Image (cartoon, rainbow, N blue to C red; front, top):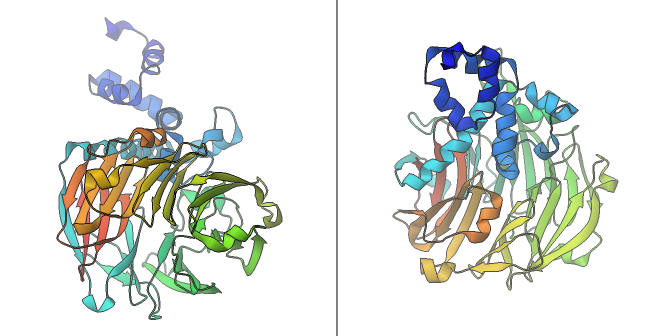
Length: 433
């Protein structure tokens, strides 16, 4: 009976399906496959699915694109996003669906080996299919193949100072197409105790790999707090803009651009940003936020400072997704907030029986690393679900170590990936589902 329907009628029926049911319908018969494939290729079908079915901040994590929430059919931003192509948005949706695999508790662990002379791994960062690792001796390595040959490239010059944090953006990705105007843009920011170094990649020659070039070094007030940094999601003329210690910086100018007029900024121990909002925590346990204006002029960056609450002790790590905040303190407590001035404490000590050492939250995956080498992985469908997180409902991976130093979450194009650095020398653990 359905074979008698005109294609236009079939298309109208298919447009009322969600993404997963549409893909099941595509496998029913050859005619349906052809109709759905035609729908995919000639329109913005998968962009609509991504905007409609993926929580906004999860979608921002996966795409690295800001302000996706303002895109709606017919406006300029929606038009720009549609130019990325239907295959791009279909792959984005697939990555979102793949995060559900961690609930199946089926995973494999492989190890990336490095020279023990570098010391312990102190920082990790994923960027698309690439893994960056920072070491005690100041080196940063880029791992191009964490599955087989494990080829690494040394990125930085040794300065014999531990790497505190790594921030990266890949040249030529959708971010630079939508936000950056320059072809030569900074690709990597490495944070040390008393300085920040910025790097970029350029082609050695036509199609023969990349070489790293040192761009500039920005002095920093010596600090024990590696997480007081966060990238600032504003601006189109420069690649890296970031917030640290009460100042907003630009990579195009080493001078301090805008200082928060508040003495509490000198006590900042952790910061994060999302959708033009910066959240920071202090040594006294207070959490604040401020918004960034629509203009690219630094003098107008900061608007009113908002008090978000107190978590009792010094803030070690903050993760912000819109109004939702996840906070780890020096007392090894985890607090969550939904935008109100009240933080709710999770019973991590009662459930885990040990101290929490680091956290990571990317897309729908939350990872908590604890003392004695336990890594707990959670599926968090939307940012609001963090408020009802069931601490016992997770995948627990036990590693042979005493401490978990750093975590990073990514996707290798076919599976979710979690990288774990511990106090064990010479190895980075790679977990896949």
